[in-house]
Amino acid sequence: MESNRTFTMLKPDSIEQGFMLPILNMIQDAGFNIIALKYKKMTRDEAKQFYSIHSDKPFFKDLIKFMTRGPIVAAALEKNNAVEDFRALIGSTDPKDALDGTIRKKYAKSKGENAVHGSDSDENAAIEISFHFKNNEIFS
Ligand code: IDP
Ligand code: MG
Image 1 (cartoon, rainbow, N blue to C red):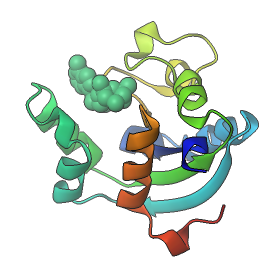
Image 2 (image 1 turned 180 degrees about the vertical axis):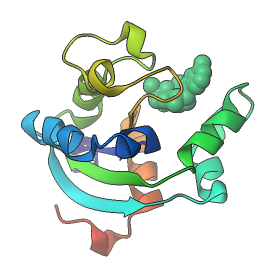
Image 3 (image 1 turned 180 degrees about the horizontal axis):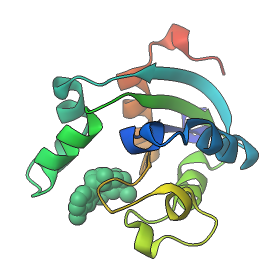
Image 4 (image 1 turned 90 degrees about the vertical axis):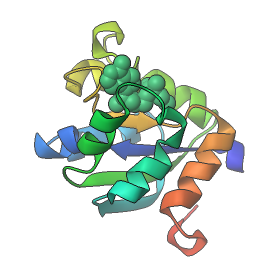
């Protein structure tokens, strides 16, 4: 069911620092099933479209530059209450505000370079999963 799915990206800062596998382990240990997985570099157009909701924000240009400077890991995740539970696992946008034990507390450097993405609603999870994966790339 779509409401049991969320979407994540391990951002370029995570990959550059060798945190790909530790973060994927944290995600699995928290009970999420990885049902789709892709290692890729986003084009500028893809990043602009993915983050289009933020296009009028002052940090948009930096965000696009950051998200396209190296590869990301994109994943679709399945778990009961996936969206909410995954937002709890990653912690606040700014790692300074993130709780102990969260991915961003452990691995993020700043509010901009904050290690991971997590969908903020079931509706956006579905949009973001289909942005990155075709149906035959998802193994539920
Ligand atoms: P979220 O990733 O916790 O949902 P959003 O507000 O949706 O946070 O912002 C999307 C992404 O844009 C953040 O994860 C972060 O990389 C970047 N961002 C958000 N706010 C700021 C800011 O104030 N300065 C720099 N980058 C920001
Ligand atoms: Mg967001």
